[in-house]
Length: 340
Length: 255
Image (cartoon, rainbow over all chains, first blue to last red; front, top):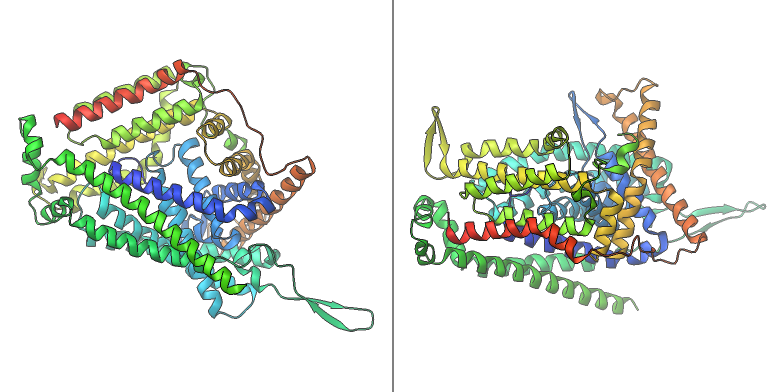
């Protein structure tokens, strides 16, 4: 699953690096209160757990075994913010200490495996928990579906990145079909393993499952006279997930990113893409490697358009992140005011 | 995975590369790989130079070639992907040994293989010449957020503890007849993993309480305070600046 160096061009690698840095920074801010309460040791040990579990062979059926990616599982167990930090930590350690996944592809890997799987997995889990019976055990089917969907979604995100900055032009529909098709199978394995692990945790320590913290049953006290009274369990801090503000932020990010990319596709790069699709690409290549160095500047300034394309991409991403965070901030302010 | 998990891939020898401060190595290798990625794939001479420079690093770091070659295996899934590219990519086609291959696909396959391999070797040089502890100190001096550094350092510190926990659980499970080969064994394997999570979580709580009782106030003490000397920065960056010059030359000259 780890993307190596050179799979995406330099602008895409830098852009996904910025997205990953933004996501980690945002998660650090959101998880700050929890981490101050529970300590960094807990998140670090969860990361060590995910790292170790990724090496376990699970028998998935039909004589095959599967590995866990763990994004959806971590989100259900420790919550989305800590999970993004945990997954990013795991990928950072794998990239720097174990030479697994490229250094420049670190941003891409964190975006795909640390961000997309966690966010998709967590939102589906939360949405399904609203529909399912209100008990802790419901988190198992909910997170199973979350895990099932999160893997093909990450594959789809990979395809999207490939459309923007892939090194080779492959027919996108073909790539998307192959990637999503294969990763639905991987997702089924992920779902089976997530369900099995989560039900083992629910059986022993249901209070540890973050996604189901609000579903803890009340404590029933019976005194000597036989009078029973129920006491609500301790509500852990930050038990109320900031789901709405994150949802609004992500929706805003996608809308803005869509608008920005509309403008971007009016750029010559878009034309180049269409040209490549229609088979003019060979012609463009031969003129780009013409003998005279001036030919390079003559052909509509390829170097220039790439530099400006990269700049546009970077600025677009920065603006997108900034606006997304701003909208999320405003939304959380408003909902805080509405509550008080 | 036994007790060595906490040491990463470190090859404990003494060399110039090992002695460089970690932050210099991280920045140098990052710039180097970025330069490699930005090089047009048709500039074959540039890739030959990059490969030569990396081989020089491996020799200078006194790393056994066998270790480097073995670690290259992590690339395998993407090598398969790269080898499929010539068959699925669009564009003008060429006949090679009776197979109809896409021209841009062949080039793209070369592109992914060359850049991916150079990137992996660069990462191997970094991880084999730097102890995890030093890497964390390097990241800290590169001003990563302190909370992230704290999480990273706890992960690295407890990696071998958690792996050993997992190892003991596997022995316990297998000695009870659950080899984990059949689908019926899934429950036993997953039960062990669930228990591993509970153990890790509880260990995290205990560690935090122990830290608090020893005066932890939310800030970790700095792991080290010495920065890198200017000469060390120059030494480390010589490699990556050469790579940047090569990449720029390859782009501008269009060779």
